[in-house]
Image 1 (cartoon, helix red, strand yellow):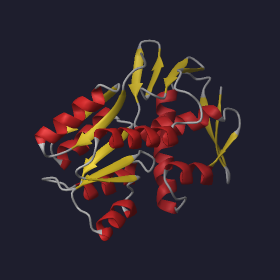
Image 2: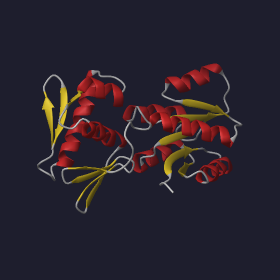
Image 3: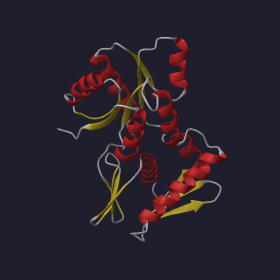
Image 4: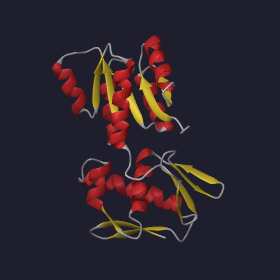
Length: 226
């Protein structure tokens, strides 16, 4: 059996949250259940889930606020909102804040599972999740790890996907504007500065193998060589 897909579920009704968790776990998902928005944000930062299911009305931090904060760090992760609200403006707000889907309570578990699978299929990287060898490193996109010898670095979602694109385009220029729009959603100045920070972090991790380098191609982008 394949390794379970990690999902973060934020639901402040413990009984409903447990029902959803148990139902998804029978379908080979690993479910991280959080009962409020603050706990959900901390769990997102440490556990690197592949999809978020967020209740809108939660204590400490509501689902819309949580999604807005996460979207600033990760424009690509799929988000499904769960809500008892039915007003059109609420649905519109959810999508405007970065939601990919919106499920109104009460809902059937089968419908939730279908929507989760559809988003995961749409969001799957072009290459499969098999570990990739480059230089002396082993990169695992699914686990978001970079290993050399006995040393294993855990990458953030964005670090992992940025490195994945660099590896796919090894010895070729990775267009700066393309990757900004792909991973950040916009190629404006502030996102460009953010990407520079992530490139610096990756370079630091890659120093353990001097044959591997990320070089700047001025005016165009970056190139991973090894």
